[in-house]
Picture 1: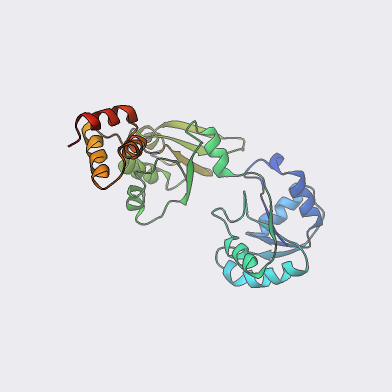
Picture 2: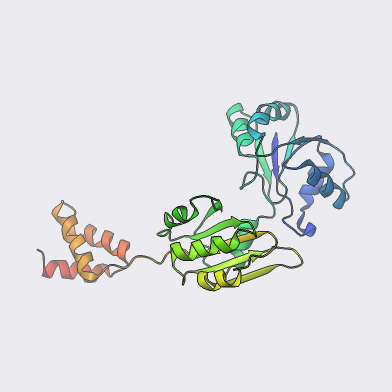
Length: 270
């Protein structure tokens, strides 16, 4: 069995009882950085010294087959340096290979920088998308492709690139878009800075330190004029859609009143 185990993103007190038990009983651990895992075992008072196998971005595809075979005969515990493996961390090729081979994959849930930042950001949490690390090259073009995204956006960024990233976010999404810079989550110097992208770009113009998550509000729903919406209704009815269905569809898309669109279409059918 492959067991994906979430590890603390900062505060060791967030290590779950299940995680500690898994570490105490593990025979094989596939770790993003074996040195970090040794430190974690020591910090949690775990005396078990399992076999450690390095599983990182440079070798995970090559190591997947070996670990799948090990998982046929016993459990393989998979750890990233912090948070849940596979989420902008190594593990996905292994999970895909295990699924193809019919080997069970399960998880020990726990700390997540993505969800923690989203929860404390003060921005809508009902719908969101995680975009991982912003690209180093073509960042502005990549962001402009997201300008119409209405869900809250979550990004990872490094401290020495955050100033340029916030400037590009402001250029792509507009300076007044709301956002939050979440720094050192769960750690002693945790900070959540909220404001517009312009305000945050100015605040972090000289960069900062620590682990960062950027949370950005989604785009506001596009607004259509009543005349444009009525024209859409007429186009739909001309193509054979019933007036009732046409007005319902356009009202949902534009946020305008279905009743008002329906009555206007009846009064002015052309």
